[in-house]
Image (cartoon, rainbow, N blue to C red; front, side):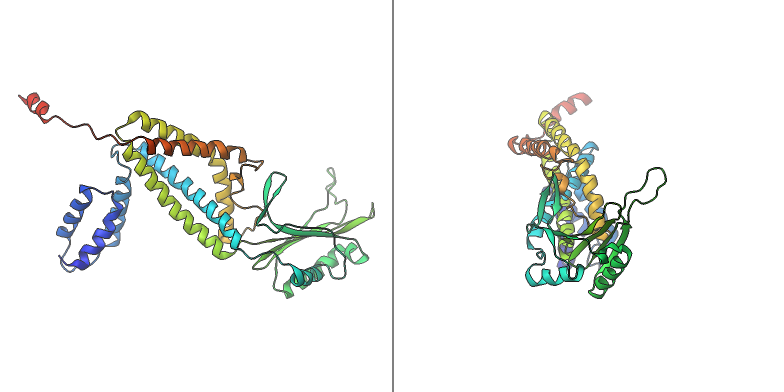
Length: 348
């Protein structure tokens, strides 16, 4: 059999765990291959991958181990993607400063003096128990021009579009009368974005109380390279989670008490992560599709200080660590040896 055919088969069969089975399959497939066939076909490849990944788990008659491996793979991918995303933000472009910020502020609020200026330059900030994107914000006093809310926002939209921004939404922020539904003042907001930044802009004016002004907040969009690398690392993390589950399953296969303890502890930790995974996955899908530019990272619920589900981070991490420790500290036990003599005695 040609080496051109043997090499792809042997590479593909690495999906199986080490052992006699891998070599036996290689010999069988090479012997059965058709003459002139130089590589495995797509159906054959998928079949080998599926059975090889299942073989990694051991316990061929046990379906529960497959369910646990699926959950381990999913959550390993989510945790890996979250870590990669957080690290990647350190290399993301910074918020505009200096002359660039002065030019941007002049375009947004020409001729108006800023007050209440606030800036956070780290990738993220703790905002009252929530992990939010770093931002630059300020407000201005009202002027006769800003009191004409409709006209001012129309002019702002023209300036933004001329500067390459895309207005994504305009909406009223005016409180309404509960009974009649009538607006109590004329306050409106606008959101816009370009390739690097997101703008949240509000023009509020209440003639009854002679109050009004502008509120401006700008934060960064996630770079496309970071979104793509987050996805790639997440997929690799899913593979690592499956392989880790398979390693632990085969290692503890003949230690039922240790296997039960590790599986129960791991399941408990993964269950605690379900809310963070659900919210984070939905948010990341919006980022990936380009339909959502949230102010908080998709992994915010994994931060222990998060007021929503952060309290679950520590016990979940402790449980998963304990499950891995059980597999590491318990040496594998060889399979019980069969007694061929007893089988022969039974026949006589």
